[in-house]
Amino acid sequence: MVEAEFGLMHITGERSGPPVKVGVAVTDLTTGLYTANAVLASLIARQTTNEGQHLDVALSDCQTATLANIASSVLISGERDGGRWGTAHPSIVPYKGFKTLDGDIMLGGGNDRLFGIICDKLHKPEWKTDERFVTNNVRVKNRVELEDKIESETKKRTTRDWLE
Image (cartoon, rainbow, N blue to C red):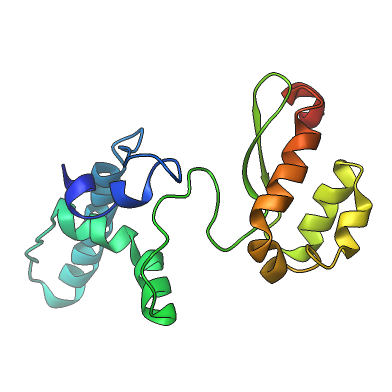
C-alpha cells in the first residue's frame, strides 16, 4: 500500500500501462537499510555522549526518500514528472529492454561513447555520426525512431548470440 500511496507505483510499469507493484518488497528493504544505518549512528553517538537515541522510522518516509531523483528532476525542470517508462530511462537513449529473436536484452548507452559501442556491436557504425543520434540530447528527441531501429536489429539474433 505504501508503494501506491507514496508514488512508487506511479513511476513503475509500462509507459502506456497501469501502475505496477514492484516485484520485491523494496520499501520494506529500504526501510530496513535506513534503520540499520540509524542504529549504527546511534551506537557511535552513544560512545561519545553515553546516552541512547530514539529512532523513529516509517515506511512512508523511506519510500519518499527513494524518489529523491524524481523530485529533483521536477524541481529543476518545473515540469510534471514523466510517469512510467517501463524499462526505459526518461533522459538516456538508448536505455531499455529490446526484443531479440527469442527473448529480450537490456541495452544502455549512458553516454555518447557507450552509444558508439552499441552501434558497433549492432554493426551500425553510421549511427554514431547521424545528426539525429550523435548526442544523447538529440537521441532523446528522436527516441522512438532510434529505439525502433535498434529493435529491428536486435530481433535478428537470439539473446544468447547478443550476449556472446
